[in-house]
Length: 91
Image: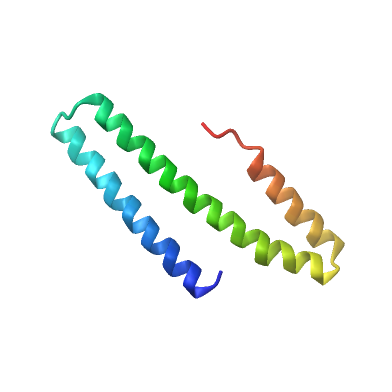
């Protein structure tokens, strides 16, 4: 993963961490349930964006490398990994 991508994702995860701490405070303060659920949805969306960026980077570098290497076993392994991840339940 490129350094600029690492920096971007690290910053995004720090924001997610702050959101989660905010959720903890909301629970401690007995905030309105729908407000809490709304914030949980926002955290999930933020984590999904991080996941998408990591997968995009994986395809652009790791999978691309396997394809260009000509190593059929590595190519099959990378495709199998992607299929396994993409077929996992999202809930």
